[in-house]
Image 1 (tube, helix red, strand yellow):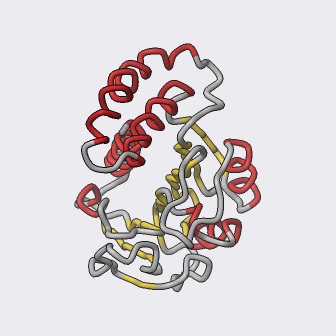
Image 2 (cartoon, rainbow, N blue to C red; image 1 turned 180 degrees about the horizontal axis):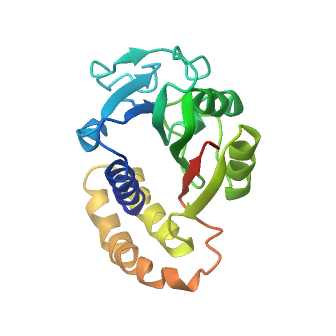
Length: 211
């Protein structure tokens, strides 16, 4: 679960870097899982609330469309959008709205998938390269952009081997685990061989609205 762990670490670090009392928008908050990390700030969870029928959206502060945020320009000191951009039909409009509602100098954490299975169907529309994310961020007015891949080929292959277990019903899963789990656990050790990390689960992006 390297991608999930990297997401958690990035959100924690982002939250810890913000001043106390900062107003933070979680744009695409889902079940508002990241609220506890922003205990020192003022956290606003915003989502349309339709991605997963099994989720509990009751902790959201505001329900609505990400491409029409009901907030004043410059209202927030920081924003985050965590594995949500693949679920919107107009990603450029969503990022433009996030930029509009950020104060000058406001900081933005964006995490998006690259090699990922379909999920929350039918609300799953895109996958992103680092170049596509850089383009979208720059087109919507962000600067100071930093984009980090989350692992390379061997971490991706490890994840896919764990994914393979879902195709074996009942007791066959234990037999499949015998073949898939040991190499899946060992493969991440080879990840440094993938220096370019073109095969990656996703990207963690930091950006800032110009002052």
